Image (tube, rainbow over all chains, first blue to last red; front, side, top):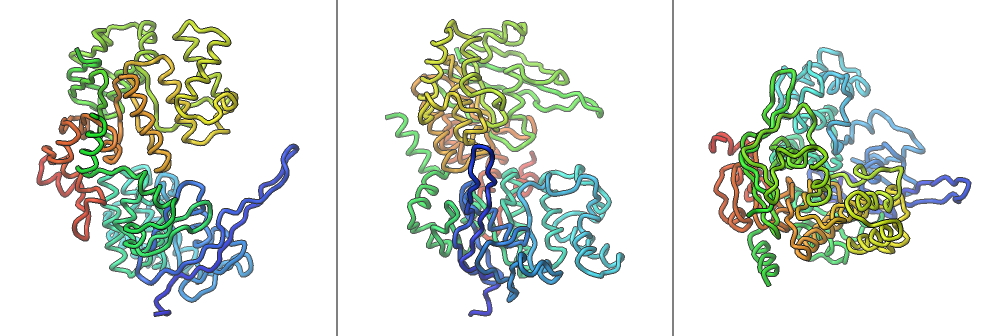
Length: 276
Length: 278
């Protein structure tokens, strides 16, 4: 089943230099420390952890925004090390990213049609009529209307903007989509719509997701495999059932214990403890 | 007599397209020693209601209510000066973004001391001692050292603890917490919620939790008000709300929780809106 692995990461490190000042010596911060994992084609890997655990740094390396300090990344058989080889169009077509804040990730002065066409403009030689057709098709695919093509980002709600960001990410027909907290800024009901959309797209296009989140209930719903990070290291890695039913590391246990429980039994228990 | 009693609160904002009704006749009551959760999505008017109570809305807002009593004092007729004696002392509020709520130019000790200076008779050294005491109460490690720290030298969770210390500095009778843990990590959220509930139980104050997170509601509330588009959908004690939700909107919200997912797809609120007619 070796062929089915689309993303292979081995012993990945990322170190940042912290520049010194008058009173402070220059030092180094290692944000990601020796991370290794595999993701199978068409599956979802959830990366869980608190702020500062290195999960977004990992996302930046997977999407070629940032170069790794050492280690190997292989996406769909293509070895990625942008500090040595730079980025080719072929590499860009493999992987795309969706960020947490749809307000911040769209240019307010760019029409939606243009937003969607830009990846094609930059990375392919497609004529403009074809780009337009593809953009219109993509709008429908993510649940928007053709008349939204000429509108600006401020005319949309948060959930619609996240749909636009997703549409932009899949314009290039990527193999791998990195989702960095894609539903954290959204209301519960909108969150449900976006999670449904992601599930539909995965099935339709055979997409592979790396889903970064701090919300364990979302992770439990969407993930096939779960990786828990803590201070740059992977402390737990396994299938969703393994991790949720039998967490090994203390940090994972703390995380589960801290997650609010919204079931009737837990409420009853809390009220009983309070009355006592 | 309830601690806070509001009848038929309406808030409208002037916009270029005419008045926009943010709240349309909602009642709120909180008793001393009670935790009330107001839950809703963005645009439901949950924050607006409490900002109106605090007198923190801009001039473009028109606020009307049949009754707005805090301990028998009519908040509607108070002058700005009289209101300031109540607000910050007997009613206090904490907000979502702890780092943005603190002034970056002053130490946390100075900002904490300001509250005490305005509302109590404490002076100089006493203010500092009381501030250290408050920081101890909210669980800041090494409070005597941290009192001279600036907000940027503290983590988000610690800043929220400082905000809570400020809010409880004058032993308020009512504390309003507007999404107090939304910007924080899960493990920190747990600590802050535990702290708020602990303080509430020790002091017997009323606590209003404004949140969009059903998990937070389940972990803290005694009674819950569910709002949608400026109207109250349901009011119930926390157990009945989760066990047997009456309003179709509440049922929709609860079934949109990923942990309650049964099939392949999550039901969304709009699936229910057509059937439930809200």
